[in-house]
Length: 218
Figure 1 (cartoon, rainbow, N blue to C red):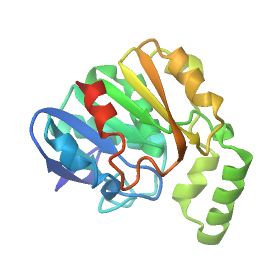
Figure 2 (cartoon, rainbow, N blue to C red):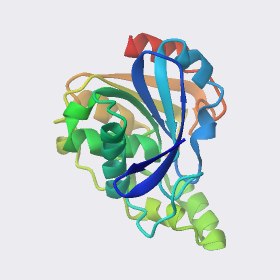
Figure 3 (cartoon, rainbow, N blue to C red):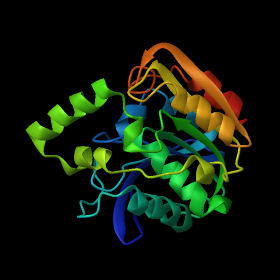
Figure 4 (cartoon, helix red, strand yellow):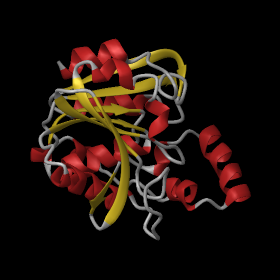
């Protein structure tokens, strides 16, 4: 399915009935990373699995910023009359969800922020070197954006009063204390650390989080 959001053609899949639940993938991925978990979520929610701009089947543009993608998300909720919607964002998708909630919290009900970061400096040295290698080889601007964005202050994130589930992997690509800092700063957040997992292993093509998401979103 395609809709126009923020003057960009956004592709998405829709399934289930109930409260709207938007799924946002990470960098250089598409909505199909959630294929394993969508059926379980669709039993309770109307699930909208979205391809961000410059990803999947959505329109390719010259603007790769999280700011633009956050505007797309807000426009998507407007175009389909979803507000207030629940959102699950992974990695870049979690950044987009957080930025959108900072700008217009009335569009959202609850947020699940999976492996989110606030600044490029949150990357571990090992992760930075790995991504740099990928970027040097591909020159993919989506990867290049990781080194310049996001630029979110913890104090600004703390103004988001929506219920939030902050999830990080024990062996994530970001400094381990980041998730604890964010969950402690947000007034209605809870923290969950995925023991034994890395950045991708608990989300991509997995339904590991299904019981936790069903509990959190209610």
